[in-house]
Image (cartoon, rainbow, N blue to C red; front, side, top):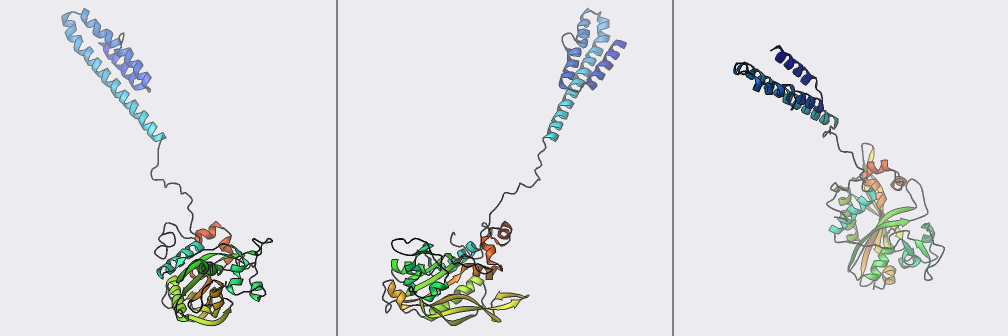
Length: 358
Ligand code: PHE
């Protein structure tokens, strides 16, 4: 009997010490395999006397059951531990934030152009475009700026060294040539805005060699300055999102408008900053006037039948006034810090309901 007790103790110790699947299998073979110790004991039952068998049988069977149970338990324990170790090693932290991917932003100039297109679309204006490489006739002559006109020198024009089809070529100095291109290609009534890049040889905090303008043109019958004033007022109220916009129209001079008016918008001082609205001071925002008869004529229309107004202003300047930047050069530096600060999210709803792309 000591044998059985000793065997059991040995096997139990071996089972407890087995720390791999192979080690536990080795113990199993040693105890319960074909030549295993317990198997041998079970076989020995056949050679015993009935009395002996009756007393030894249950003990051997109990040993077999105990050892089988211990082996199964140890095996399951080892498997669970292996799984735990694997899970611990392959941990995947689902609470970690996903790595951020770089997201661009809408440049304030694009944003403002979208806003302008949206505002004027509501007033029935469509968007017109023209080439940035322009000829002298569209940029100047047709706009009543003949060759000897001092305004040509004022514009600090970038000229190309070579002529094209006998014409002097240049980088357009304003968006006004789009007036000409529209009047020579479309039948009135006309209501367009023309946003785009323009170029002048000039550079300081408020001037860059390339900047953006937006032109407006209305050609119809019986158009007068009142229409111009209402349009500009409606536009500026919508753009600056304020009702207390006050305009001041000052007599001015542009070769292509007669009369010409320069438009100032009133501002007030809020927390030491100039804010558009009110009339504590005045800021010039755009040039405009009634389209000159000679311009209408140059486009092949009869100025006694068709009249209209035009206006032009800097898109960058409007952006600066609305969103509070103070150095125009930063607009075109491509500095990501500036763009992150002043840029607009493409996914956010813009200030106004849509924009050109909407
Ligand atoms: N083209 C003018 C400029 O660049 C602005 C303007 C446009 C003035 C239309 C009157 C009418 O300064």
